[in-house]
Image 1: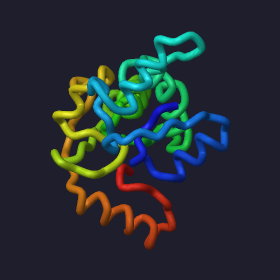
Image 2: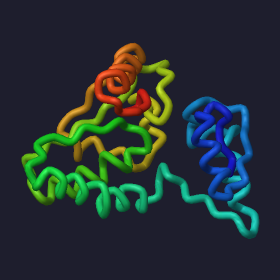
Image 3: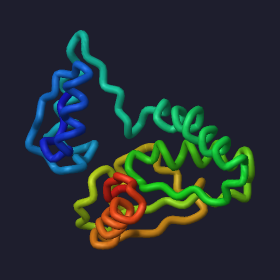
Image 4: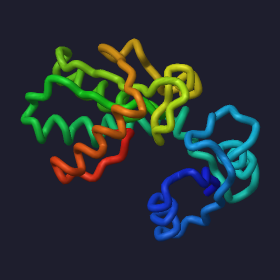
Length: 173
């Protein structure tokens, strides 16, 4: 599994714990899917060899489908169908797209909102508007709105969740 050495250590450790051979590469925190170098390019190269396969989370419809089948129903059940808004960070866009589709099928009035960081951000796991062109799962016509968040606000909310709510969440949350 090639990945950026900027990925948080705990994520790299969990991958190794579950048996992945992790190949850490010098790369940006959120490498561009079409970049000619880095982790994604290495994964594409390996996928041409026997015994390797690239799942491609940026284009694989199994990504939003998994959220349609699991995340959406979980939210619907836990709110007894009274959910009114679903807000998610925009990364590969599998979460917002799949979950949003499920919730809107149950209630078309549910508002699906995508959050993206400003250009030049350093928030892992999410993509700016320009970077969202790199994912085939970005479906803005299916969202009721989008808004940006600054690094400062994302990290401040992260600290607030931890200190006030005891919720350990990263800035992409």
